[in-house]
Length: 226
Length: 226
DNA sequence: GCAAAAGTGTTCGAGGTACACCCATGC
DNA sequence: GCATGGGTGTACCTCGAACACTTTTGC
Image (cartoon, rainbow over all chains, first blue to last red; front, top):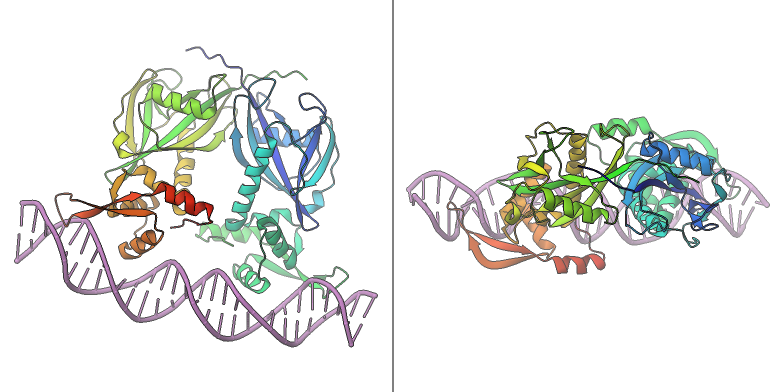
């Protein structure tokens, strides 16, 4: 059996960040054809000896300089005509970035790198608009039954940050009292003896997510759901 | 930018069927090296001009002759050493087959094809055991919030078939009265004026899943959950 | 003292869970 | 008439949803 195949394998990353009460994602401006000068997801071809995850990390550091906090495979896009040059199968990932890591810089393979509000995206190269739609759907779904939201917040955060994050991403109002009652009842948050004020209003207590505790509880059959 | 890459792209399918109150899956016996004579998931390399889904369908008809009722992408496996010959990235799918289509035959690329009870699988080639674990987890998850279970049953089925399917796949006992109350309350099942008897016990009514109705309700925001 | 955000409890209703007995058929 | 699976109703309790006032700070 002879195998003659000219398909190339690429990875693309949908990198989410949360700031100013809005969900953002990271796009690069392409230096090269095709779609030169157009906006696209960071990504590129997988090297012969690296794993898919390693390729995502390498491409993100070549094109941007973000530090990612969470990475998960999303879906594989393989329509024969999705790349005008040759057949490319793209394994898409999505990633979450904490606000501390928001500083970015264009690197070798990109002309520019920017955070875009997900509600206001530019035209996108390839089928990247479709990939982003999948990623958004997945993020919204995941938020409800796994505590991934903390991956978008700082180590220490206000309870209201967490609440607003949910309200923003799920795009629906949340009752503060019910939400707080439920979230705290999980026992996954440590309330710190530190307060932070935004300059206006009553200062609020800081919280921290207890990841170890979550893994322990998960093993015992605990099921996170919001 | 020159792209020199020798990765090959394959698809593999985890094909589930349900019979004798047990979940089965379809394996082929490999005709060729590597793992010649070993059991493996049906699958193979993607042709340059076919979509990934088309490749799955083609391979399934080359190696088996099952009729697929539901097909969904599962996950992409791309560890550099997963294929001893050369670097292969496998896009795995899982599929559901109705009992009518249980008849199978080895075809050109396989020595033998068989249904195996998922609780009693042979040693498997490549990383296929791992792929199957992912597929089982996904199936169990999906069963709870989408009505995919009907894809494993005949067009017309006994209510108890449906209940046993859930009890089997989720591996937990189900209260008949509560389950029936809930499922029927969705209004997705049509009760037929036909009865079927297994030879013993009281004959039971046949039901049919109303897929059109499901799509309509889903658009209006209905959320299936069991 | 007023504007702004933080913090907190109770009531109500829907839905999940537990649970046991009669029915129709084949042998 | 007995064995086998099919079909049904009720009581309780948990949890989600709705809802408003007080507190702490900055100015």
